[in-house]
Image (cartoon, rainbow, N blue to C red):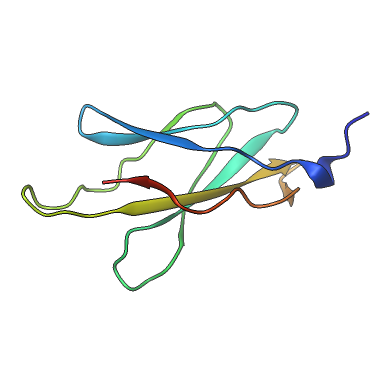
Length: 94
């Protein structure tokens, strides 16, 4: 049996139709909690809890012609509670 305290999501981010797609695998977790840092002085803020892999970021995008690097981090959830370890922060989309 796998110990949920060892679970650590691995994220990938790619742009599709003008929005970031935050890729992740579900495994035995019930869901994932995703946080984002838009480099706007607010550090990481809660974005979504999702039960289906690959989450589309629906936050309004920066004004065209500006450069912005957003980072994401996530933690798995089991029975509505955080479990395991936070993913590495720094998965970026710009």
